[in-house]
Amino acid sequence: MKIIEASGARIPAIGLGTYQLRGETCANIVTEAIEVGYRHIDTARMYGNEREVGEGIRASGIERDKLFVTTKIWHDSIAAKDLVTSAREAVEAIAIGPVDLLLIHWPNADIPLEDSIGDLNAARREGLAHHIGVANFTSAMLDDASAISEAPLVCNQVEYHPMLSQEAILGACARHDMALVAYSPIGQGRDLLEHPTIQGVARAHGRSPAQVVLRWEIEQPRVAAIPRTSNPDRLRENLDVFSFELTGEEHRSIGELATRRQRLVNPGFAPNWDRV
Figure 1 (spheres, helix red, strand yellow):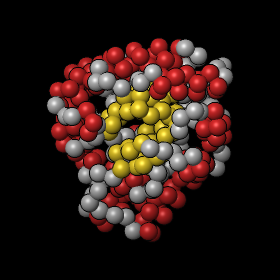
Figure 2: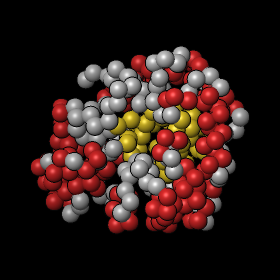
Figure 3: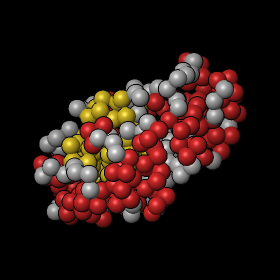
Figure 4: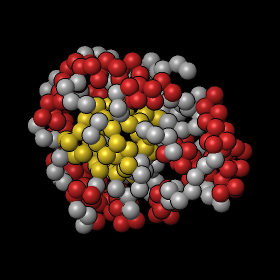
């Protein structure tokens, strides 16, 4: 398993995203993911499944220090004092001790960045998380948040796939020794996987289109990916991306698809995204 090193954190390059996984299905897929080799599990307060994620982790029997667990605090709970309260509730729900990484899930234009980043640091000082970071921040927000934060911010979790360039975010992550953790890394399975370029590279390597896209992402120095699935076969497939390499030309041709700038996640409270 490739490890992304960022400001002291060691983040496995492929993780399991758990958005929309619920109940017994969620707990079982987390257990199975760990059994087949996943060491990075991602959840969030908003997902409503932290308790089930914790159940799945405990059922696997894995030693706690072998696993990297992330949770995120929703944008309506990041005002001063609110974030620490929400983080305590998250850690209690998962029930495996401190999380490895605690993130602000989305910025909130109505809450001063100094307050939310200050409280994120307070959660870390309280021992609720080993590392802290953000999600869905623009490059300018990363610069500002990094300047404010007492502890290093180790990642920005954002939508990233070959049809959405994140050059500005990658540049900011490099400036601040941060990882980029990609959600929706295979474009939610839409027309990306059917694109002729992806299909052609997949045929050349005897791999699935999803494996090709994930490989493209993790070949980049600071990028990890957290594909979500409830399918045990797809679970194994998504992890099996470390035994082949793309050629330089294949990597470039896939990257050229970003001219579409196809953003899939863009709620009304999203920030003004970086322009390419």
